[in-house]
Image (cartoon, rainbow over all chains, first blue to last red; front, top):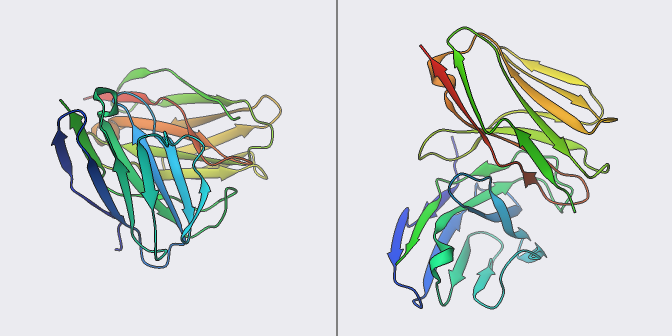
Length: 117
Length: 110
């Protein structure tokens, strides 16, 4: 069964350093999402891509976070510089639906657990 | 924007009993309501979803009900088993991408 892949699974970094996370969605899924999940809370959307275009990045802290999906397939989320409050699980998800009104199931990757010291 | 409230935050039930988790949403335009189960250290997985054109959906021991007038929806798990222990998240979307509730930690006591 196809799954969303993410790497690395764990990342420890010091504040002010740069970190990058990678996501490979299920083949053929046009929509890709990056979420941040703080311990004990639900996932919060950071950015949504439809193919290579950003559909929604209203909750992305653009002064330090950036995301790209250059070829409309895999995606990279970067944080520079990392801050203590960025410690969280970063989840990637994909779906076959399109646009913000997606009624299709979102499939989640295993996540990258980031610890900022 | 959409706001989803989920209750209770923790729930303990005896094996074989039923569990009910409730969510409310604020955006009347929301029309898709999935429920995700997240086991410790694992990814969220969809267990059931409902769209606004139906009031109830059932899949074996799991059912979801939707009341669009009151803007609330509920997850019902019957004959609970220890493997049902996990964190459950509700979510809603319509004019906005999925907004998740804060989760309910369900513990099924054998």
